[in-house]
Image 1 (spheres, rainbow, N blue to C red):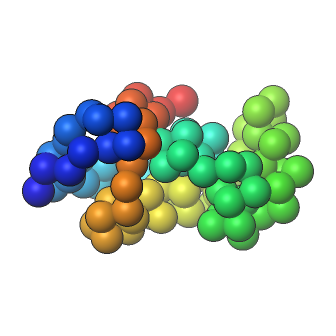
Image 2: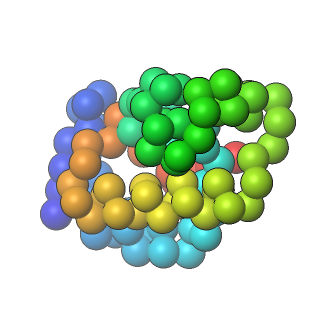
Length: 93
């Protein structure tokens, strides 16, 4: 299925999901930017405190948090949640 992101970029979601199947971990900041979330919204989705989310600007998140971000991203793509910027999923940190 072809969808258009908020910045008018068209992507094939099935192809993207297949590429992301190999993605076991996703940095929470890439997750936040890909879906256009605020720090607070991303923190809520990842069961974190907002200040913890902000700390990831300088510190590395745990493997558990990265795996959770990747899992939620895959789920949201399957459920057709709109992407804002796909490059953060295709070229993660």
